[in-house]
Amino acid sequence: MVRYLGLFTIIPATILLAISFFVLVVLNKLTSKELKRFAIFIVILLWFSSVLLVSLGMYIVTTGKHPMFQMHKEMMKDMMMHKGAMMMRQQDKNAGGKMMMPANPAQ
Image 1 (cartoon, helix red, strand yellow):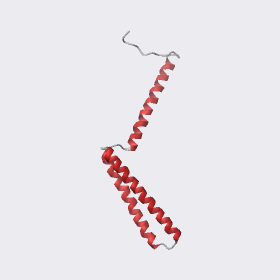
Image 2 (cartoon, rainbow, N blue to C red):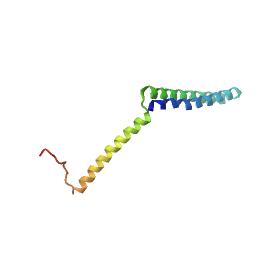
Image 3 (cartoon, rainbow, N blue to C red):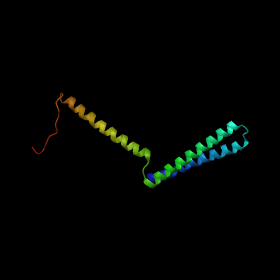
Image 4 (spheres, rainbow, N blue to C red):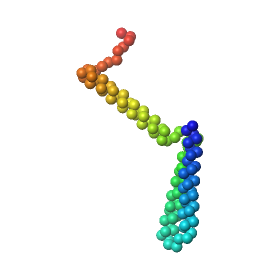
């Protein structure tokens, strides 16, 4: 299912390209050189953003790994490890400062 999420990057990429088209239309009507340079800069940024989005979508579709999901898994793993350490400290406090060793059934 995660692989199909990569296809949804087409929507914002298309929107960015449509905006860049309208910027190019306005660019033809501009007379000031500074405004034309700024419009070209904006168009280049929009195209670059579209390429990044499409490449991210292709990465997700081919690998099945979504970068945000991967980061979320790592954060949850770290949080669980931290929670386990906190529980061990709490057990140590409840034992009156004595180190509690787990019971060994082999003895």
